[in-house]
Length: 295
Image (spheres, rainbow, N blue to C red):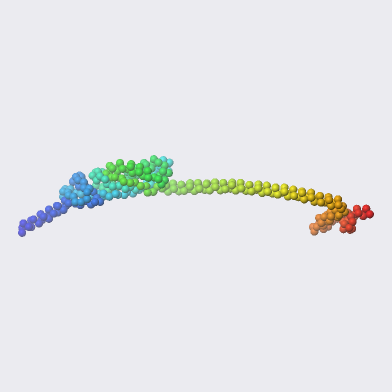
């Protein structure tokens, strides 16, 4: 009975020691076995692993692909047009031993901050070597590849592998954005004024052409009417001459009636003349004064 009392605590202690010497490596993790702060073993394969109890400790790191959003930063391209760039990176811990040596006990938090500094520096350097039009264009995959390739070497010193770098947003600063909007508005207003001026010029040409056409048509019509009037007057005079030659008295009678029609209108019904005027010979007699003298 006394022997069992001594054996039971020993068994418990042995089991506790055995259990504390066993640890599980998850498939999503990598583990380091540390002895007094020094790396003595690396466990990358998932499953059971062993360590010396009380002397060694296990530190686990994420083996999955991680993301890091870079805080927005201002860059100055070659054309001195400042831009605000927002980027993110995907990376993983490739060498856990080197990672531990580089970041110490800070772990992934310190590594993320240091990677952020690397990405910001490389982003400024790469985007500062091109124009803003290249950055703002839709085809900027080459720029993102350059940033990634430049960050790979520096991140490798931290035990990290940079997989991808993407530019999420590239905008103008607010002050520059308002100035750009004003400039774009001024350019559109200038283009509109040019279009209006060209339209007015075209309208003036059309109007001048129409006026000239009107003048030409009126001139041609006036010429044709004058020709027709002259021909009619000539024909009328020919008829008058023929009538005068055929019957002189009738011709004089017709001319007198025409004179009465023109003289005795509503607005000119009062006439002052001598009583023996020849104007009213045909109103006093059916024979003109010359005919009376001939008798």
